[in-house]
Image (cartoon, rainbow, N blue to C red; front, top):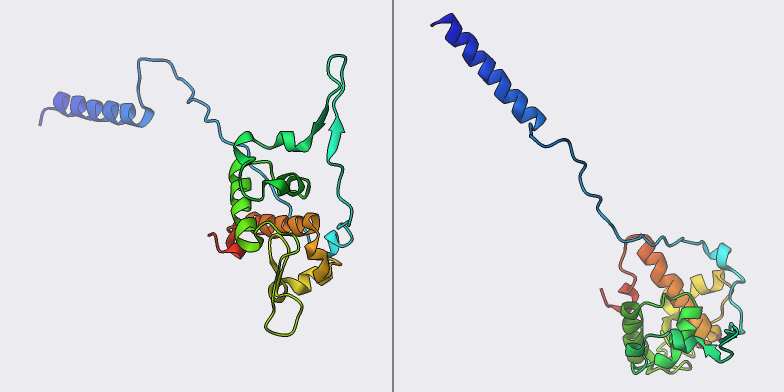
Length: 194
């Protein structure tokens, strides 16, 4: 074999490997575009001892006044509910749900509406009769199940009758939902929607 040909072939092979490895381009080096991602929501998991005593029998304020030099009309939290949600079943409980921790998100509130309608027909005093002599098996708007959750309720300082309070019932349901979501599980699983 000719030495010049051998050296030429070797140089050509090295040059091709270098071009492939470095990604030769006639354009100057450009940075890749920045990918925009959605913000992540972080939910803190709390131990029952951390939430004990946080449930209050009184409701948070439902009205505030927005006043500036041009506007002195009272504004109500119901105004924060999207128009598309106002005709859904149980929509009267959306403001309470938002105050209890649920996000003001149409997708979440639509699902919550379905659950409240299916479980209690929007009645905060709903009580599923128990087959073991208890007053109820399931309590309130969300129908919190005594058999599955009574120990957690006790650790939080709640009685089954507290679950008839719409705010407490919805706040407890939010803790149940968000705690599962924070663990990477489906938050709607307790209501068989996963």
